[in-house]
Image 1 (tube, rainbow, N blue to C red):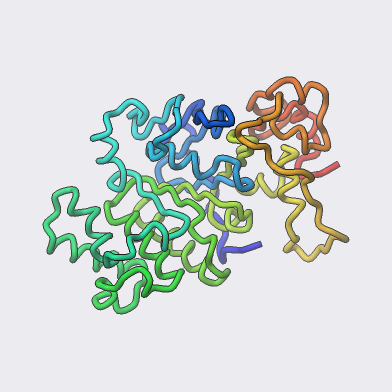
Image 2 (image 1 turned 30 degrees about the vertical axis):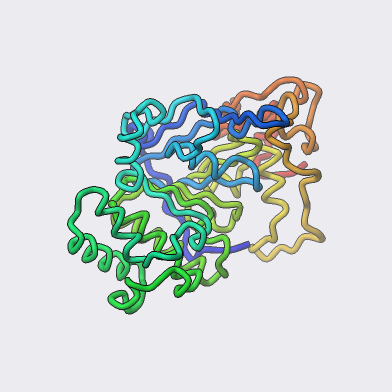
Length: 345
């Protein structure tokens, strides 16, 4: 489990503020030869200005496609629901308006910078293009690009600005991606597994950089990751996803101390402990996540859940806070599990 060398700030008291991003009942479906693929199944997500939110879950849980859907970058699927950013519904605005929003108001950090960056154009040219497309003169765009490369820690930026992606290390390419995401001075950044291919030391450097830049600019960040250790040191609030929907949402502290959903508990108990206690063996979640084209009836997690009841196999649980709980969970047994939060019984 990776770690970031600092603790997240307490959750902000912003309940009364309007969220910067408000996603409600987001669904995404594809028609394929083998049938209907349901990639997202009623995702709800709110992010406030300056807030750091983590989205976690196994591969295929819908994390990345949620972020791509927010920017309407999923072309083949049918998206429904509501995505409000600063009051605008991004699912109804014209494509010309979306082109203004992408990069300028919402930045995106891709998982694999070597694939996302154009190999035949210099990094400086690619970063400055974000500004040139918005009418900034070439000389000014280059100056601002150089400043940003220096800000994200590219040494000898005056020379490296004309280098190509393959001439940078993995960690430096990720810094270039961060520079590209921030050069337009957005209010929100969607960071899709930004440290997956990096070693632990470089992971910490990149996340520290993202933290500092977010704090400096009061920037909201949605961090998508499968690594709970990264979430522990970066996010203020966490959404746990499975089979294209949220299973649990809570503060980062509650995630590790008072989780109540069986899926979240399974993820936590499959990790090594860092508090000195050594379990006899790590627990695992049996089975595999369901295919989006063959989702089970009822709760999508019930085939792998040790607590499953007949009701779980028949009815989709509501995403609600149980009477004795502190945060919402999509589980028919949430009220019972909330009596002993954080414990696999």
